[in-house]
Amino acid sequence: MPTSVYYRKLVLISSLLALLIVGLSFLLYNHGPRVRIVDFDSDPSLQSLTQNSTMTIRFDRPLREGDYTAQIRFIPSVSFTSQTTAQNITVTLLENLKHDTEYTIEVGPDIFDQTDRPMRGIYQKTIQTAQPSYAYLERNYGIDYSDESFLSQDADDYIKIARLGDDPEIVFSNPEITMFAANCDFVVIATKGEERDSLYTINLQTKEVREEQLLLGGRLNYLTLSPRGKIALFTVTPDYNSVSPEYYERFSARVEAINLESGEARSLTNSEGDYIRAYSIQMDNDGQVALIQDQMQTFYAVSPFNDYDPVLIGSHTSSFGFNENGSRILFRDQSNFSLYDVSSGDVSPFELDTAGYVQSVVSGNKKIYIASTSYSLGEAQSFVYSLQGWDDQEPKIELTTSDYPSETLRELAPSYDGILLSAQLNADYCQFDQVSPNAQCEQTHTIIYDSESKKSIADFSGFGLVWLP
Image 1 (cartoon, helix red, strand yellow):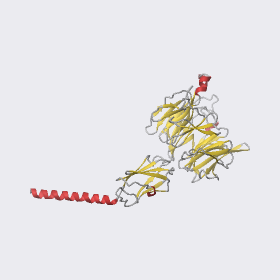
Image 2 (spheres, rainbow, N blue to C red; image 1 turned 30 degrees about the vertical axis):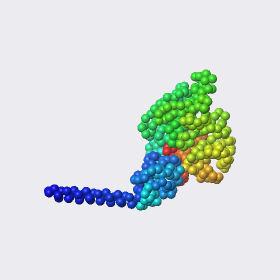
Image 3 (tube, rainbow, N blue to C red; image 1 turned 90 degrees about the horizontal axis):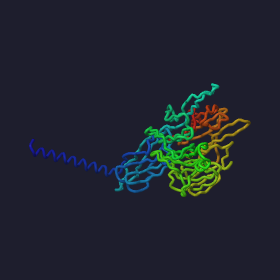
Image 4 (tube, rainbow, N blue to C red; image 1 turned 45 degrees about the vertical axis):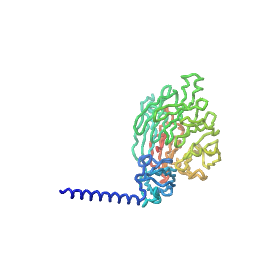
């Protein structure tokens, strides 16, 4: 091939490539910004997307500064905020998404790059949210009550995790599990020993089981873990028969913290170095604040990280904990209720027109559920009421235990979207399920109730159900 022909072909190919590059650059320049990818902080097909979960929309070029919240839409509708930084828009959810639901996310078109070119069209992405999952304790009492000698069967208790509709998975077993707490990352379990309890952490991502090294030996109580936290709180009380009265008085109900990632243990103290003691512990959804009650029924807000002094909240009989975003706390004093505003410190009355003794008030995605039990002629019946928000003053009956004679409601927990309710039902005269064998409590079981279809969709032996985000 003559050299001149070779060079002419080389020049032609180079020119065509240059034109192609220029043409593509022109097209890309005039198209404006394009969405490259939409990322979530957790996979929505595997975990529930809850309030404060984030979604990042990444573009192919830097964006003009501005508020593009109105250019992002969820179908069905979802409340959120957004923030623009460089080539990204970060969306923060203000509510929990519904389980097992298809959502369409639309972005644009009036989003501009730094040369003021807009998107050419609307970007769409469809996601399918997961079925909810949960953890619970299945107790095997290890006693054969049909045998007059009450011989032990040496059976283990189990912590089980299940996704709605699937068979449960055993993640931990021990002869005597006293309590547990769980979220989508960790399960924390307390087990009973002769003079001191043990604490174990399961990392649900790696399946690693670790026995924690506690700073103080004794009996564990009030084990608490927030839905989105990595710090577990609990109290430790020395065994009364193994220590002096002075030692017992000094260290009983001491609040301890465990970093579930590192295993680091810490005793919570005030600014003067005195140990913080508690007779109840609750945490907000993000694990940033704990609400503790002392022996005199006074509540304080404390940091699980021990980075500020306890904040006095006030004296109340009991607390039903934080609302869904941690901005308010519901307290009970005898038969009266009050709402505490965390930011202002204001307290306002909250009247609940329900029958019977109110056992709990729990919040699920802006919906509030109230569990109460009434007694008449020696028989008990439990009710679950619902409110459409903290401003709703007309509770509606959601569920009764009329289909479960001789049983009363012990615990109630709504799923993160507020649609499903887990209700623990105990046999009459079995108010508490202790670690020691109790024949009556062997009948304890949990139902899962669908508030939309108005029917029970699951019924199994076990209690203490915790919904996993």
